[in-house]
Length: 177
Image 1 (cartoon, one colour):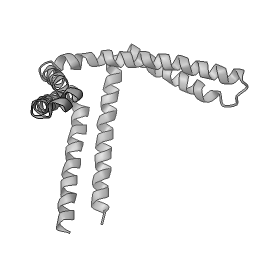
Image 2 (tube, one colour; image 1 turned 90 degrees about the horizontal axis):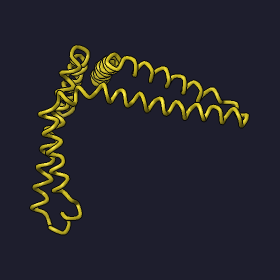
Image 3 (cartoon, one colour; image 1 turned 30 degrees about the vertical axis):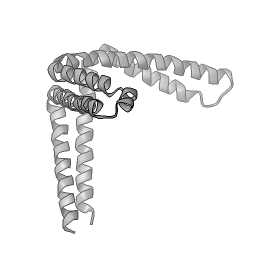
Image 4 (cartoon, one colour; image 1 turned 45 degrees about the vertical axis):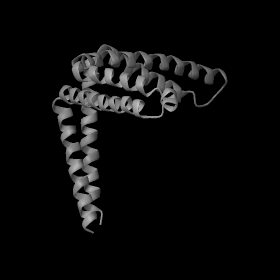
């Protein structure tokens, strides 16, 4: 029973940390994103060091096949870039959002093709891909015309989602007997 209570407290503390991250995402998404990029970079650097070390201490034939030295060096390079150039990556997010919107428009064109194909073949559920295409076009245009606003909406949605998920998890832990 003592282990169970300790586990419950640990899970509640983890949920509180999630709520804090969610609130920070709502208040200052750039800082949270920067911290995430830096943290991911640190993990890449450490993993790269482990891979490079394993390459030199492992059996030569196996390590040649696994190419751990290359993978390790690549992770170290990417990690250093994330840690030192997180601002550049943060500034690139609107461009990534823009690329995503272009991909949505391309998929919308495909959905229009599906809609017309279904109509030409006398299908009865042509409106599903038509609705999907219309939604994709509207969302893509919104993103293209307002990339920063779209990103802020996504960050806000993520923050609220994390807070709600953590709150429900805490309720589950407390009510669990």
